[in-house]
Image (tube, rainbow, N blue to C red):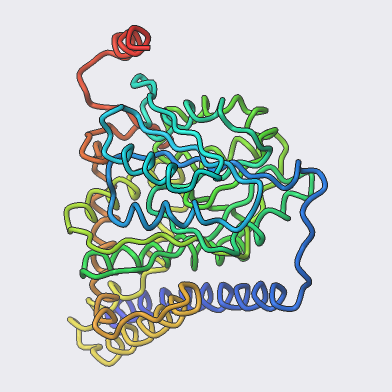
Length: 399
């Protein structure tokens, strides 16, 4: 009897916790959409100069779907908007594409910045620092290369800055476009963690989990924290930036409008590298909350139940979790999960269960083919063998 309890209890507790988070997140999403559909279009904030937005796009290579993603920004139906693109080196494969699109849209306010300080540990932050002097508007959107903008996002987010106390607004993130099993695993996981659970954690625990895919910051708040200097060596620069903005006395506010990333043809190598890095960072940033990830992952707990004779419970847990996640993904992404990818849900959950344990012992991680040491607090250190002082000197001489 005792052994049966040890097998059954984790399954039921985990499924109940997930169901609670599901109910909270889906209720909050429905209420946000209802308010958005019944409210009159919000006015452009009077405190902002013409409601202007500067969008930072740090780029590295010709990522999949890059042209379609960038086109969504060039076609923004909002003025004034400034697009500021940045690459670290003049031979970056993304640079010719950006220049071609800028020529195609001559009326769009575009700046292209080439060069970044290689002494900065986080390569994306290095580019963002190069972009900052070129910003012309009081609200800055930090947006990655795989983001595809929808026409209503600026109108849905910008009015949040009408409150002068708000220093940062962040969007829940959904991922779409999967064509391979690995891409389906990543997209479902991303939507689950960066949208569904982000909403649930915010409502239940009052905690802000900010993702850089749709991170809007008031320029005044960014200047108050010294720009991006405080996140130069942070692996989770988005989370740390939000923490610094809050510590400076500004409010963080979630947006009701999700931001969409497109990920189509991922490999298992890319999937593993990315998620071991992210899990290792989460473990180092917030070790007290890291075990809660196991609580919200019921399917792996069904495996011992099946092995010890509670097959009925295992089937129930797998079916319930798959159904709940499919419904949430449909509601948040706006498109259903293809039937052929529904079987990916158990595979995904077991995969991330394994990554959770591996990350406890991992000391290094790979980011875009470069190795990094994972340090306490979520800091990262490039494993280049080149001293930081020498790297900085090289950058100054090149400049």
